[in-house]
Length: 280
Image 1 (cartoon, rainbow, N blue to C red):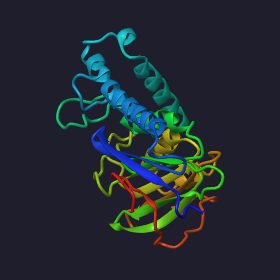
Image 2: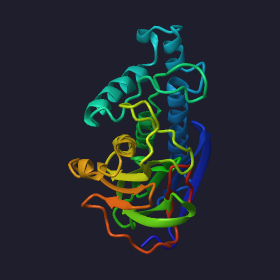
Image 3: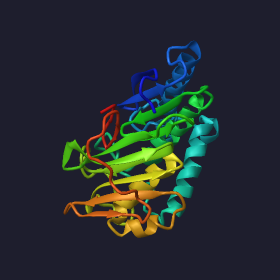
């Protein structure tokens, strides 16, 4: 159904990772598409400037140092902090940005909302693509993916890599509209902290969550990595979200609604991983 339709991709390095925008159908070379894609990247650059814990000049870092009054910061800081409070409540405290290790190494604990910010920022930026006439689109940020396929186009195919062998795709999710997010240790090591113990979460190698919203899929993937294999039971109670989880022993667990695995090799996939993923 997608054979022969025009397509185009753009990639920029933002938030310390390659972020790609893919458009298929319509007129991918048109001026309107160029303007909308530029707006996506501009939104993401703004989110990074305001909310990055890696930048000394971000509003987040300046507020933490006491150099910027909370009321004078960009409104996005207050919005994200409120969402983090909601995420902490929804995950029974398994997602908590407070008192985390400084992601740059050294120094004291930080308020680090990164586990929510990426999904929130990508989801928000992708709204610029919503008005594209007759076109499908995908935004892929470090393996976290949000997609849309209009009527007449086939769903996007999102490949999920094997955390023990990143060159191998173990699952393929077919998605017409929605998001896929993955958290794990395959590429960044044990960087997910269990807020209840203050130690790295160690039971899960990777967990992928699908659902209607990227921000919540990302948050739930992080919380599931903290909870461990039992998280699939918790995720079963979340309307619209499904998960595929691999433990450090290579056991796999899925929610009840996780789709049966299609063929392991499928042309034209978007790869979803805990590291930057581009077209595979």
